[in-house]
Length: 286
Length: 110
Image: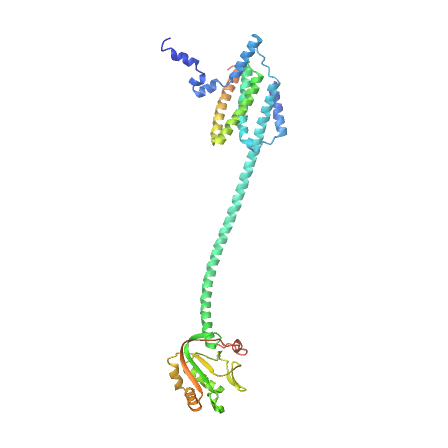
């Protein structure tokens, strides 16, 4: 054999799918080769007679199967298409409903934001008013004795003469009144006597043999605390008439009198029953 | 004649029963139908060629359907289900076309 012919023989021996293009092969073998082979076998077996080509029961059954398959696929596809379009429609409805909802929410958010802003400004206004009001209340409370106060001042301790025999050597209500008046006059801003804070309704008077302040009986020694300037108050005290009276009382009758400056002292609030106004109401402030 | 009768009976049965296809089988149904269609047209051409055989038809029908479904199943598992389906449909479609062309030649002698 020559070298030129050898490849040809090899090509002929190869199966067709090796040297044929795929699409050509598919087209050329579109009919299953089995039919031809079965026909050849049948021909060989029957000894040259024509093969039986009548379709039998098996073909009937398979064709029925094919019919069921096609019908089922068609029904299924139609059903799915129905589902799909229904799903699409419900999705569209949902989208519309949700977007309407979103729109409503957005509007509500805008309204709320507006409301928030107005409330905030109102709140600011109210708090600034409230702060001013509470500052004013604090001031008034300190002035009227409704609130405890703290600050520097002087502490005055007075008592009867230690070995007093006559009535004049005792501390009377009017002595304490003089003392308090002298302290007010020398610049006191808040005064308490034995922890009884003086309010503008407090009275110092004698009840029986005891001095009462805010209707509470006191006994000596009487500690009078006065918040004010501790540097100037003692000097101003002795300049007042009542202050001088007290120095006389100390000198002539031996009453105990001791004034000391304090850096810090705390005066309690007056009892609340001493702060209630029953008849007085606020008048016009011009 | 008997094949047409079978087809008619099958369609009627399918319409009457309207079987519910299980969900896992649903993706393989269309490709199985195309494969079955190929087997049926091949059988029709063989019949017209005079070489039809019951056994070959049954075997080719069932194996076509099963293999087509299997290929798509395998493709689904590998993540190329769509592409494999396309390939199977192209090949089966070419076969169907050339078989139908042969059938047409038989019927119209053209």
